[in-house]
Length: 83
Image (cartoon, rainbow, N blue to C red):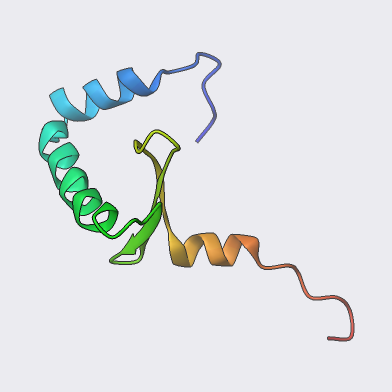
């Protein structure tokens, strides 16, 4: 699919998912918050749950999450000739 020349904000994407596709954004926020509560009780700054890595910022806010397997595949260095 061709990339649009018009940027779309994260806020707009979230509202679209919420209003058009029926995603309950607040339920997702609560689910993530519960996962963070458990992990941070033990002092974690990042944790993995069901193959997803969650990373907290310095202020304790969840700043990103990513699929551990996909990230591992992307980080692998290509093999050199003869290996």
